[in-house]
Image 1 (cartoon, helix red, strand yellow):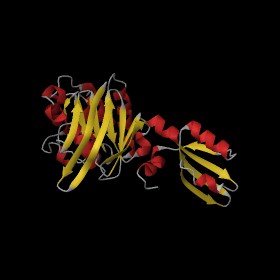
Image 2 (tube, rainbow, N blue to C red):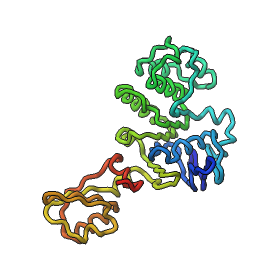
Image 3 (cartoon, helix red, strand yellow):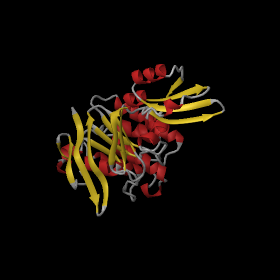
Image 4 (cartoon, one colour):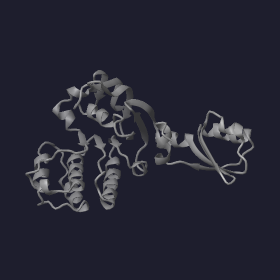
Length: 290
């Protein structure tokens, strides 16, 4: 089943095209990593899933209905953390959470109290006095303690310190244990999100570059280390993305299915030291910036 999807979605702001013919599907229960450079259209896409923006052309559906027509009950099944999220600055942290809890029938007070402790947030502190990192912590609590079916996280931990980010990841793992929990997380900290995502969507200048399971993506990318002279013909193979040689050692990056990689090694009589690449290393090749 599908939690949200777009069909040939395009969005323009004046002469700027933020999204260009993007078609994606977010399966229920999946954890999707949304990646791309600043200005690639990530936040615009996330805003469409919640109905905050209306397509210039194409369609966006959440829970099977046009996202901009979500009713109050359906919106109550969504949790969101956006960059620079506005909170009620004149309230205390505790009062703010009490206020937010009244909008949800299934607010988990015990989880909220636990997260206050884990995030080291003072319940009596005024929201307006919180640091950017602590504001993000409060936003995460507001977005998660009603146990949403669909959780949208846009750079949710960018201002957090390493200890808070670790607690945040523990929270995510806990939430993901829920049946049919769907999460889409946009983050520049790729080494952290790759621990929890099972699907990758990559945007580049408003266009969809990749949309596939993370395991499949990792299987396709490999780094070979070779000693001796690297056959010139190897570097011209379409699967080879990059080749660097120095002092008799070569580093070759290629994108091919495992069986194709084996065929390529056999073709040139190579016995490479192969290493699976992480998302941070793969990303530049996805957007042509390697």
